[in-house]
Image 1 (cartoon, rainbow, N blue to C red):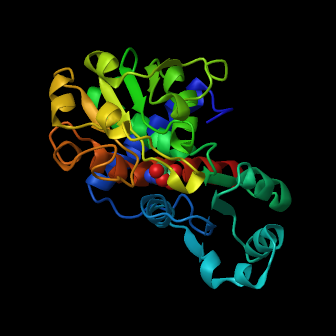
Image 2: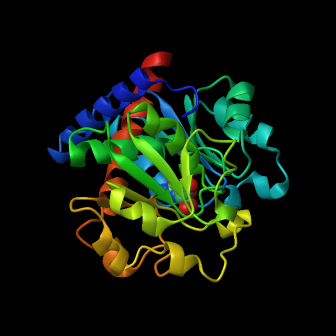
Length: 292
Ligand code: NCD
């Protein structure tokens, strides 16, 4: 989201809403990307991001190439550069890349000269997640400016938070990062408000956005993490009337959130998943227009 300005973001939100309406009406697939091939290159696990990018590309009429590192020449020692050049040489016009290394999507873009969509790079950014979250909020509240949003938990290791902190303030959302000291960025690293107390902040929030503890990136929870930061039923009851709960998934039920709140009336979690398709259609369509 670094480098995406407020007006581009607003246009992508509007395009996502148009695609969402089209999908709701079950309009037949469109042809904005007909004749183009989109490659899915996921070097880290993914369920909703990969599936929604695939469906988005297909719904725009593109052919989809799916690269799976576990069953590809990566296991024979092929380098990232050679793999990317191979996928581009096969005719992939747009590459969707998820990788554990920060900056890997940019490198692949430089090597291949093809547009690359970052589907998550290390702990750095996951821009289309922030877009689909903005779309979900826009649909729910009918406007974003002035909403108070708290991002709760393992902010430091979260690429979702890494994109939300760039996107949400540009849309007029008032953001607070909430978590234990070890999970928060250093205060001089961010312009965003930070708090180590969920209970103090909770009654003021319109949006409580929970994060998974990213154990694969070395995050460890202290004994009191759940006591202080889990969104349980008592905390859900202390939220403003009309306030909502979000989570990018995958959820670790019983850690950052309990079942009854994840599946309860405040939860927009499955709506976020559903908006992955129109939001990624908007991004792929914009790239298609730029290269057609
Ligand atoms: C996230 C990711 O992979 O960055 N999930 C997602 O794409 N919806 C968040 C996570 O793994 O916790």
